[in-house]
Image: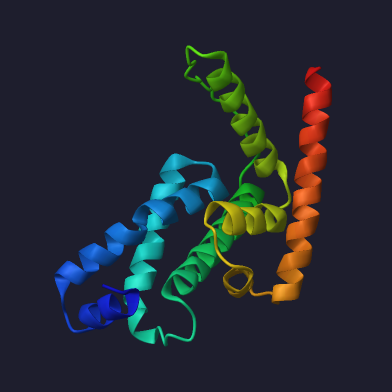
Length: 185
């Protein structure tokens, strides 16, 4: 069943269609939010907020864009609101010392697995350090596999702007990864 058919069924009161639409997107949406906020519990809360907003405003979905694009736009806006609120709370409260959580990596028996895991971890670490727009464009284009047009719609930019941003983001990520390799040699 297509997203449009599911949406129509939901608007007509079909609870099973709600479950189907939810299960279709919940994991992808959670991965996106988690990649944006880097905190599991905050990501869970934001996901609930996003899903609530999607359902609350489902009747406003006009079909001008693909449903997934519309939903990710809501998600991105909610993440932006989260950071605005976080910045405001940090200004109001005295800064506390950061607590670093120890990461326990699973070690594979094969050397290739260890090297691959290390490379993926390095990419994720560097991706987190990129400016927000760079991170967003790379995540949406290469992890979520949105088209340039869909990414532009989510980010509220032109397709040309997304292409240019993507090129700059890839160059910056490559430069950082090259520095990471050089530092470990």
